Length: 317
Image (cartoon, rainbow, N blue to C red):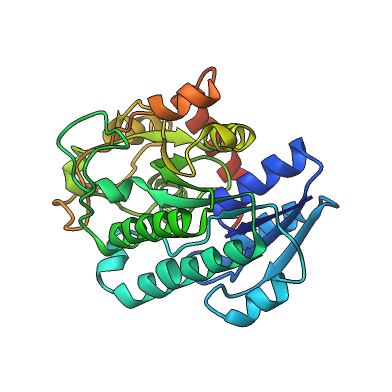
């Protein structure tokens, strides 16, 4: 059986590919365009790790190009995981066209591909950014969507597009609203690895919003456990459904930062004002997905941070 994972050189895409390769006998086809938004070295290292598995096949393709799907059409994919996207909440406001092209145009082509492949289920990456600056917590899936940046708008549009395809073409499609994911092999442009890089290079780390905001941090192993478990029980979902992928345990950013710098002296931290595209707090409810998958216990966040720190010391990107 073949499954397709787009964004396989990305953080969550890589981790999910590894999860399937270690726990199933599926042939996993990974697609990525290896763009330069962040370290190509890191993306290539992730791909090199996946290439160690005999059941993995990597294809460097651009999802905006119809020729990519003509090539893929030679294979039959029972399941599709669309995790490719242009990340970066703040940058989306300065270059909206790039986000529309990479997030909306590419996803529309993936949906068309899934339609003609008659795939059993298509999973796609959405985001907590669709909720915007919510005032009610924990955030439940049925709450109003009010994104405050272009990145969130593209994810909201994708959910509406997925609903249309599901309803009109009888396709089973599941949206995954990821909150703040961290861990080994993570993105260097996000808080945890960004801070580690500043510490190692003795550079000033700027703390947005004066450090007063909090995030629903979720360790990558918990994320892949949740998504994989949902895959195993996808028939229990609606034809079009969506789930928060989160820990339901928000943590202050200053607590995270203080834990990470506790062994380092003379760390340069500078608090700066609220960033326009940012939100003060994220705190998602995971009750909906838990009712289906019965995830036992989340990893302890500070132990998970230490694992991430130890990984960071060993790798160069």
